[in-house]
Length: 218
Image 1 (cartoon, rainbow, N blue to C red):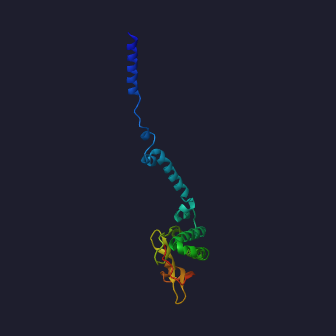
Image 2 (cartoon, one colour):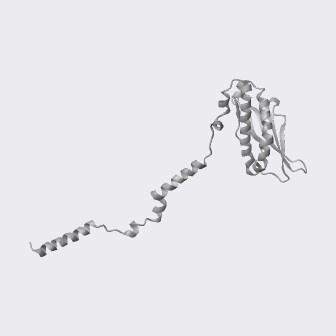
Image 3 (cartoon, one colour):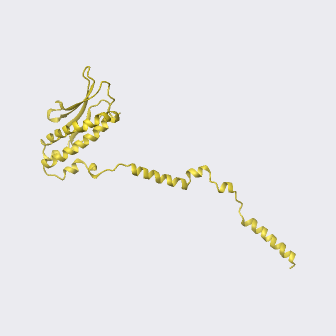
């Protein structure tokens, strides 16, 4: 075969091969992802998700085993009233503290919190212990604490009741008093089923201000 024909054939094959193998690439579009891909593509989305999960886990409050236990679970460990009373007293006071601060809201809680914790709650604990000493084992074991403090201007902080019957045994309240020319006071007290909730058992009064206090839970 003549050399010129061989060269022509090789040249033709080379041209055909290059045309079919070498891709047509637009580097401006392939090498630079669009703004949508940058935000929503896998490489951008994954780190975001991990950070969100980590942040939630770190922010989640630590819940101890004790705070998760109901009173009936705690009471089941004891066989007589004398053993149960101190534990129920502690349990009721902790509930009153938690629900009291929920009821107060931020504004009242900041001003009232320390006095409530240091002066009112110990007296409430004494009242609970005294009431418990009048009960039999079964009644004491079946006590429960409500968890719906009243908002607005309502008085309820919490109630102690018999879980078997739903009957309220003690009502722990706070009332707003406004004596003439004397500003506003918060009057903490309780009522019991023993006297049909008619007697006002005062635990203490805390002065607020001459200005009207905000509503509960605000």
